Image (cartoon, rainbow, N blue to C red; front, side, top):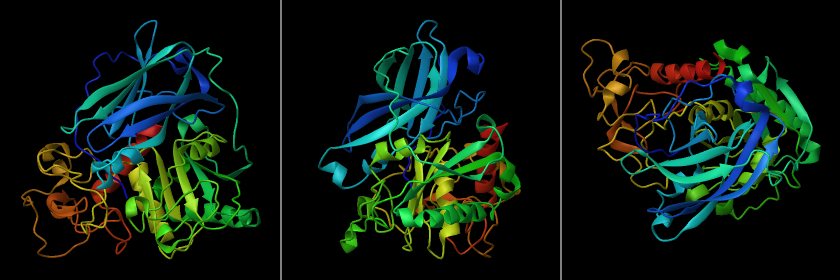
Length: 423
């Protein structure tokens, strides 16, 4: 489950040719924790802390994010030369919450994190948010003094690592870290088996299977005091390491956590591009936020499909294609704007989506006359609403679990992201 907003053609006003990684960065991570406060109409950024972490899992060559995906965006400029040396798009739980009924009546604060390779010199960080027209607006600026003794190197939640799948050097692979939620010390062997099951499930689907050698997958062997996860609607509360819960935003199957720091502290045990939280539960549910984190349960009959559906959100920026209105969000996709997600459209700027993939003379919108699950077209009903939003195929793993495939548009979007990380 995942919320988004709006399109954008991002123009890098001062983007210069990036020099080599080694000129600008050390091979470790600068983690910036900050607070995001606001309501449905307003937001405020404030810095919490800066942390030096020992590994950088990202590319050494793809330092500029040109995908134009996400609700938020950061840019890092070298202070001495004003050169843009790093940029990154992402989403957060706060962005989803802004579209809930609660956000109309109160304000809340969320802990959030952005990471970048550790700069050798002082940098200026600029934080951007999309406005209601889908345009990135600069909201906050912060100067990072690279040699400041206030950048802590203190490690928290240090645990052993299970190397479930290692294909090569982190800088050239997609590094997934799996975090255990609600596994007791006696269940660590079960967690290892669930990591292996995650791998089997992920690579049971294309285009992941044909790209297996482009992934590293590691699990962190961190136990919880109690087994399971919180289920507020059933008044079930568990003492777990990541404090996850169903009923996020009062949506029964939405399984997320607001304990951002614990998530990041645990992930820091390894180099990572994507965080996947595996919750020890048989209940149906999960969630994911683009370039933030992914969650799913480990022991439901649909676990493998939940894995890949949620990873479609968190990794590839894919939108939900179902239209059953089961979320707590209001007016996520204004009909006058084109969503940034590659697999849904309002037809405002369909040329930017999968129009070029359609067979000649395909009607737009496309009627559901003869049902073929993967027949490419423009089918009404997506993004939690039945009218005004369109998806590429009658069915897809981003719509339901009645099929075993991603549609051609979603497959192409996933492959494009894989290539961006690894080529």
